[in-house]
Length: 183
Image (tube, rainbow, N blue to C red; front, side, top):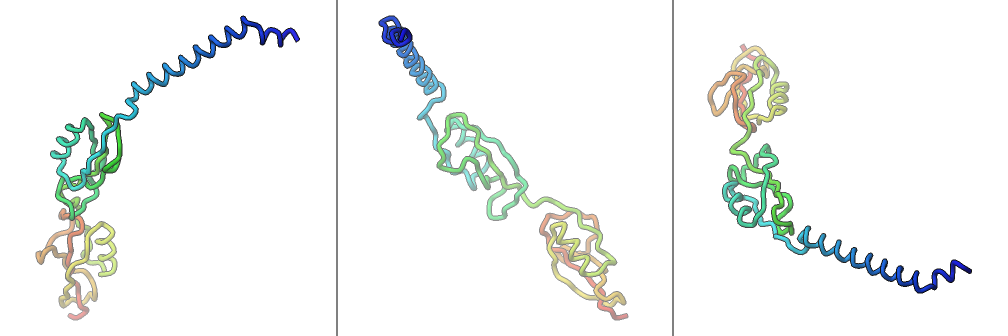
């Protein structure tokens, strides 16, 4: 009963009202300050950067007060010009804050260069497997008189004989000269 009288007393009610008012004002101040600090509602729309040159991208993002970072340039896409943007994150049309970093994947200037494996004096089947595993494509196959049927005698690139170990762009077509099994 004494506790109930205390809860209904003027002193308690005044103190409770003051504490509640202070708490509501404090929360209002915190949310208002947080709103100002995070710039809630202030956003910039990310432009579409795909197929744009990296130099032009820098000027576009600088005007919009955005930053960028190149993540990777290992994926070569022959449909895009060299040093142009292939992918971006966040995507075009997304809303971001001022100063946000845009992550870009850039098209390299060409395919990566690879060393041609030594496939001379092995069978066509093994040579084809080795060349395609590295990233080359099988080109023209021709035959020459030799006792080793389907044995690789020479490797060719663009019609010219090449030696194993030479460096060529990935996906180059490598031609093979094979033995036909005749003397």
